[in-house]
Image 1 (cartoon, rainbow, N blue to C red):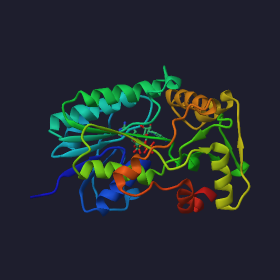
Image 2 (image 1 turned 30 degrees about the vertical axis):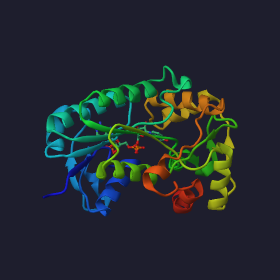
Image 3 (image 1 turned 45 degrees about the vertical axis):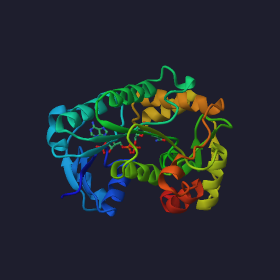
Image 4 (image 1 turned 120 degrees about the horizontal axis):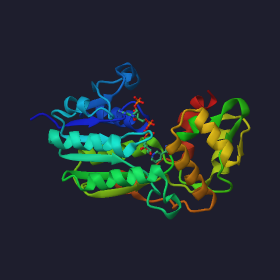
Length: 287
Ligand SMILES: NC(=O)c1ccc[n+]([C@@H]2O[C@H](COP(=O)([O-])OP(=O)(O)OC[C@H]3O[C@@H](n4cnc5c(N)ncnc54)[C@H](OP(=O)(O)O)[C@@H]3O)[C@@H](O)[C@H]2O)c1
């Protein structure tokens, strides 16, 4: 009997690429879906590659053909629409289990009205009503965001977060939970709130980063308008930028939920600390 075929969308991104890597390493049959096959080199492994676009449903039938389980990851201005297309294609193809990457706090009062939260909530609801086994992952802040947020030539991180705290989470642990949910029984109908082990202020995270890379760094509590302009200049879709700013308001006001034990419970080992993530990414942070 051949082993189940697992499709990963968003396979060129932070979590998807790591999930593909871990699935291949674990000897599973993996199909990595991407819009641009030129990016396949980034995966550097033995996954099958399929080219498809979540905005174009006509490309998805072949991507999902023969697939047993799918890890649905997307990003951009309209996550709900992209993922609805994936879910519909999965259902038509007879996929038996879908794991969706969502996020924490989309159900929090402080995120009410944010298009980003609405989009994930709508997508979660659609998945739960699809009639296919599902697992929803709601991770907290990705530690890897600091690779984008660190402005190296100014030795600073510019975020409107004040003294707020958060739960930096290692993308490798998030991907590892996805792999468990896709390859072992017992995860059907579960919503997993995934965080790293610590509840750190952003200032403390920046300080740890400075110590790790051996360069003084500062956290600058910028006005929201400046943060918005910076995100626009970086090409972040406006719905995402607005959602992030609303999130940072929540951080600043102290509304972030504390860490959970879920990664330890699912993986049977503690989640990686922020220091552990920094140890493995110091060179990338130095640039
Ligand atoms: N960053 C955080 O702290 C955080 C925390 C909690 C939850 N999340 C959630 O995590 C998700 C993002 O995960 P990530 O950071 O791993 O993603 P990412 O690195 O931003 O990558 C996004 C992936 O989605 C793919 N994609 C985008 N539009 C697509 C389309 N039309 N068709 C097919 N693929 C498409 C991209 O492909 P291309 O390479 O072709 O662009 C890429 O592979 C989002 O839903 C976000 O809300 C993030």
